[in-house]
Image 1 (tube, helix red, strand yellow):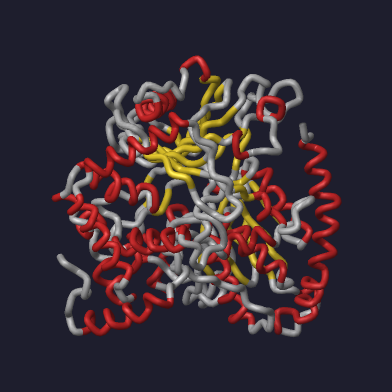
Image 2 (image 1 turned 135 degrees about the vertical axis):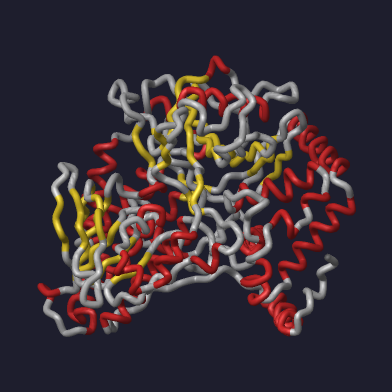
Length: 594
């Protein structure tokens, strides 16, 4: 068992010392350059980063490496939606509290910018920093209710396939045949055609025609079988973009689907299609990141809530913050990076600020929805699978992963909780407005206890339905629902951590990281980036764009942040150029059969 105090001491001691040595040259050089403005070391440009999630921490990281004096203001907890958190009153016998989270972390190989940051965060014993805390699940599953589950290995170099019994193999074959027989061949062929149409569509067609077309309409789901709708229309959109298929932008769904296919083929990939952390997020990533940023001189003010962002004399003159005791003050800096979630940020932008840059007002059209996690702690390891599962027929669109299997350096009952809980089944609830199977109520209409019981019932319906008992009531130790959810079961439910969704037209309302206000920048998963999805990768990339804009305005000669776009297959680009001609002539894609 690894003592938390020992780990923290090691990170803050040996790890931090190494980090200081490694970064001292960078900081000194940047201080000597003084952002290209000839300032002395004591007059370094100051930056207030508003928000301490992935976007805010990324901005702080890039700025601090370039010699800026950075202060991060965070209302609640560093790490934002990505963080893990302690389950209150769950620790006994010297163990750490049970680990809870807003939702399980997922870092696929289509990400490039976030992994680059992770490689630059020192971690004791890891040559590539916290990046080496990523592990590769070996399989995934579509759990069907009342039918055999579709279970797939994830092939990747160095990724050992899961050990399967004869019964496992038989079930996999039955599931594949069942789905193949129920999905008419003409529907499968049609979906392949739609995929090829999107793949060969030029950027102009994607940005205009497909951005305005719902995925449900693009794949003609209304005219297809139930299996086609559940797997290829609804399942894909809920898995990839957490948006209803009837509303989701074809451009967004298609772009991410394309990226995952290329990833699976090993094209332009940073790693396998599925990667997760080998410990609770804060232990494996966020805490070492914060410690590293402190060694770079970043100051953190946790409990600092932003209350107003005014505009005067052509810039942001100050920002009003409130501390945990309710005391307000106006903080000043040379630059301000707004890294708050869009649903919170847009409430703070003054009328004058919006008038100075109309793209801020367009953010009012961006939509958010509920996607929230619940963890079930079990007294025994659950024989589900080594990877993620999608309960594709569940009314609440559940996805889940059993975590203890993926934390090889943790002895779960010895390290966490009361010594009885042996595993954590982490579940994401993507649909909060459909009626469940237990109470006949939506998730928002249920109390917290009813939500837990309903999710458990839907999990059992998906996993215990073909003669094999996977989840036992007797093994359920306790549960933990994200505390950001409040007031459910009342007429006024609240979710502090909503997720940006991607209905048609969203692309054209996303703002740029650089605003027209010369000392004000945006960073967050709603900002225009290549990945076009509310993800940690998008948050990281947007922060890099914000920092580059700030460097330009500072006149700095510091090296700009790298930005790696999604992979574009060279062999497809010629077909896209041909489609661009057809699109400009008003013709449909050459492969589009209608």
